[in-house]
Structure formats: structure tokens, C-alpha cells
Image (cartoon, rainbow, N blue to C red; front, side, top):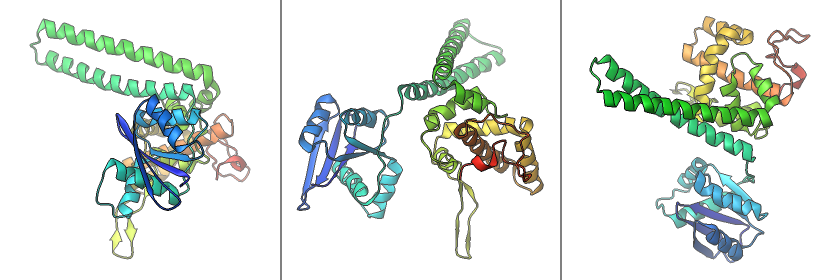
Length: 335
């Protein structure tokens, strides 16, 4: 039997595929609950690597169960599985087919083993997702209230209801922000101090970076972090005739990109290195948006460096060779 088990996750069930030594196919389906998880392990054993797509809460429940059983688990980006399926020219799409595609991908690729993030990181990510939703709802209600008020005619009942809703959102936002700061101060105070020492990165951005990177333990170098967030430059060229316009590869966390883009606005005014960087690119005729993305990239590099080297950021630091090292000792910069 193959050492890999391909699993396609749905809301209520999940389909499983594994091949035997004689290349025979084994399909199974289980309920998306503890009973189904137990049956899965009983029938396929603990000596396999169980591979599934990252489908949010649906995959996390099974992944955590398997991990606690001491079983190897791999959680793969769904886009990778989709591209692999397209490469195989798959025409049909069913749960069974998807389970087999996941199995085949694992068989021919070097899948990385998964481990759950710490409880604090998981809670921080949930809080930040909740805050994002509350801010959106608060802005919608607040804008509607202003629109009614500007019109000159607003029903008193509607005004009272919207005012109550806006105040409730503000109260809940503050409660979640206080809880987020409490978690950071109890568990990641040093990382917060390092990140906020960088002019342009505030408490909100620091919290996002800590949660996104699992306190910077998730990545080995800053290039991986930049690619994960989706700020890597993407070049579109082929031969002598195709010269597409370059842009960033937006395959990562869109909210993280938004926060870092806002940080770039602040950094270009208050961070000496970023100000110089901005002026250099401006002199070369680069568009404003391109420069902001470049500054966001630079901030990520600096953030990765100060945390990995446990060094407070110093924007006036220059190496003995006179090279701008983003405020971090040159011989400690990541590769």
C-alpha cells in the first residue's frame, strides 16, 4: 500500500484514496466528525502520511486529530493541487477524483509535514479575522448614518438604531483589540518591541506579522515571507515578442498586503532609509504605487532581520564599508 493517503475534505464528509502494492485503488468515505476520524485511522493505520488541502476549519479539525495521534500530516495549498490536476489534463471533478489527485501529487512531490500553530497564534488569527469583519460592518453602518444625516431628513427611529449599532461595533472592536494586545504582551512582547522599533510599523502591523509568521518561526528567509504574503515581483516575458508588464504575485494574504501598503505610506515620511529609498526610485521615474510596494517589501526584509537577529532597529546604522544595511548588522543579514 502507498505510504500516502489522499483526502478530499467537504463540509460533512471526506473522501479518501490510497493505492495498494498491486496498483489497485482503494476509495473510502467518512463522516466529518470524531467517529469518522477514528474509523479512518483504524482502517488505514498510523504509518502513513495523510495529505489534504487547506480548506480552513474543515481541514483543520481532521489535521489536528491526526497530529495528536502521532500521525504525519501534510496540508497543501489548494492552488497547487489545482495546477497539478490541470497538468494531468483532468477533465472530471468529483470528490473521489480530487482525493486521488491529492494522493498522486504527494507521491510525486516532496510534501512538507504540517504541525498546528500554538494556541496563542491561532487565537490571534481568529481575533484579527473578527476585527476585519467588525471594521467592515462598522464602516458600512457609519457611512449609511452619515448619508441619511446629510440628506437632511432622517427618521428618528432609524437614527437611534444606527447609532446604537455603530456604538456596539466600536465596543466590540475595542474588546477584541484589547484581547489581541493582551496576548501579544503576555507571549510576544520582545517581538513586538523589535517590530515597533522600525519607523513605519505600528502595533497593528506588528500583530499581523507575529500571527502570520507564527512569531517568525514559519519561514527560513525573508524571500519566503515576501512570497507568502504576495509581494513577490512577477515578470511576464517570453522570447523577444512577449514583454508583459511586471506586477506583484497576489497569491498571499490580501489583508496583510493592505496593512503593509499603509505602513509604506508612513515609512516614506518617518523612516530615514525608506525616505532615501523612495527618493531614489522617484528620481528613476517609478510610479507612486510601485514605490509603495517596494517600500513594503523593504519593511518586510527589515522586520525579518531585526527579529531573527534580536536587534532593535537603528535607521542611522551604517556598516564599516559604508553600506546601508537597513539598520541591522550586515554580517547577520539573511541570505
